[in-house]
Image 1 (cartoon, rainbow, N blue to C red):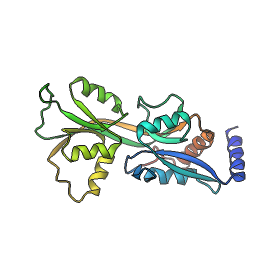
Image 2: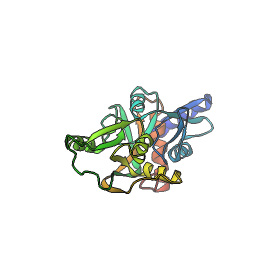
Image 3: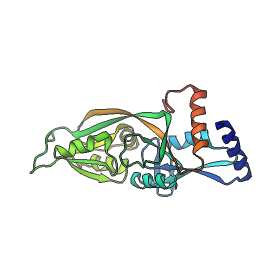
Length: 233
């Protein structure tokens, strides 16, 4: 039955060469990279195009902040994105695709010598992404008295920390390492790293997408054909 639906989708695509699948992208390099509000790409965009795009199907990257992207998933303004399963801001009307896209490391970075426990006279500030709860770590740190400085995306949060405007940074490690590699010299103070969690991130499809079956089947077939445990090693 599923194969029949896919064949019907292909016939529909052949009749309509302008069929467009919209991939939601926020600034989370190297997987998602935003150069500006209308220009975004990255490793995950290229792989998704390799899997889903055909002569009759175009994959278009839609640039947005994470908070905006979750609303667009709910309404069907974007067909899919990549995200961890545990983000509380994700809508209910979505489906995840196995296996994971990649495994992420969630880390707390802080400048060496900073007060470990914040006080009322010296709160410890942490840069983070607005709309991310970081597997409950946001609440844990808030309860300890840490003060969050929320930014629209991963790179904005990283810049706050690198420029010394916050005492700490709660981040997934891949975009932090990507950012440092792009800078000839940051002049950063010495910092320490604490690994908090290792977590898989997945393709997530909007249940509102008319291409939900096509997307899910193509991704699953690609993983099976390649015999991979995650889309990116």
